[in-house]
Image (cartoon, rainbow, N blue to C red; front, side, top):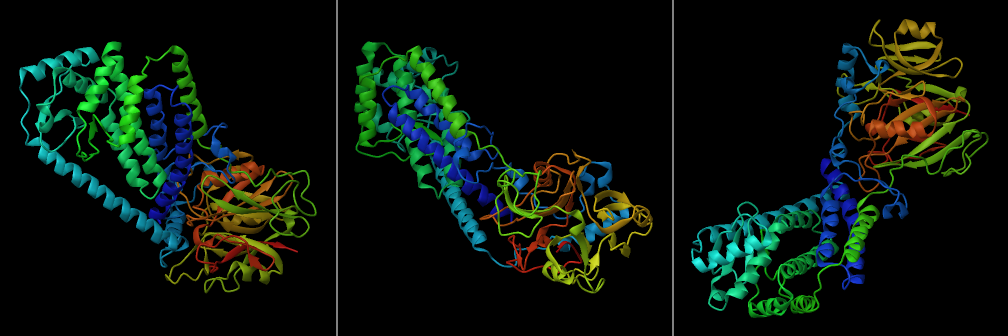
Length: 609
């Protein structure tokens, strides 16, 4: 499933980068005769960063805020960490979120089944992700092999020791403010001058041109290539190649980087001309014409060449730019800075992350139907509201129940033998809705969902206890309909008049305060949670996951934010993974993990009529 998560990020990143690429192309086209060449090249750096950096800065000015269901791309490290167990108790903050050592061991044994593998059937998403990976690996191997072969050829060539060349190189490095002379190699393996190598770069000159070059031609070549050296263009080339390999399926990215390399040569021409006297501009253009040959040089990722692209239109464009070159003015320099910053804010930053419901919830009245402005999923029963939610990497459902006394616990009829589907548990109670509830373990490895974990209380009676006198983190309702969470023993449940109780962790919000640190430490997965507002309204949350084309899943922090946005004063995480389910009026209304097959579980919170 990690592959699908990575591919999901690649697709989203590629789509967003395509929008940025179009913006850059439009800006460069509209201002091609106004914007300095170095700035036309510099703004392409935004595209490289956008494609390769998995973490995005959010801003209200981002163009992606205009897209429907916009979402931020979460840090990919978080997205790739699927939880192996519900029992990572050590990472949960807050005193009420700790199970005892023995209980933690029980949960570790059971949760491997609760988060059962879902790769038993090859989904289309997985197949497409595998095709992408194979294509990227092939392209990467070809790129490395081609450049390694070129490296082996070049390393055999002798260094140029001609005093004439050395003096010209020294003169040019002084002019460009560079403290070192680049070694010069004469080779038959290229037909145009180029700079080669990130570490210890060398200037390569074609043997076929040496006899045709005068001192002026050589000086122009050296200054041009030293400009590539100062600007770290070989490193930028490699970053662009890495982005192309990752996003090999996107033709717009390939076209954009071809244009970027053309702009790179224009920028180097401008740098070179800035180092020359105006009367030398024409001779620099003649040097380019002198170096034209019928052959087409092979481009390598590790080089920056005098020509870069020998396309006739590009050569004509370069000659035209040289002919009309003027040194930049402060007016257009500041204009370029403003454009760069604006493009960065609009296209490089991401949309404001929203873990809110489809629209804000009005807690003033949920009585008799839909909350004001909410996204109504279906015609709910009186006192119930159902809404769609979406966030950084997920989609899900929220069900709000105005009267907390309507929320009951349903328990499988055959505890210790087999569990039941949420739909069956709802029907058993004559209810209209329900979600999966507490954790469970699987001592026989049969995955039948018949063994509730920790403490379970149904209608005021303790029905299971596999922790003895030890305190565990419970989730339940007392006889007044108040959601109670925290560490309790079996004896304390009776003393506090608890009506229905299950066991799970961690608590998310306690008395109005979030108790989750960071992202919660459980990675991204399908989630189920329950909470309560100050007015007693109960909040059911189910978040879909592990479906890259629909919803990756949520972190515990994401789940907490949902409850915060619904003004919960207490909230807790319930069993998730393949157990996550919301059932309403005869059908499952979320997207189940296992292709619409309900899982057998021991307990469910249900809503009675």
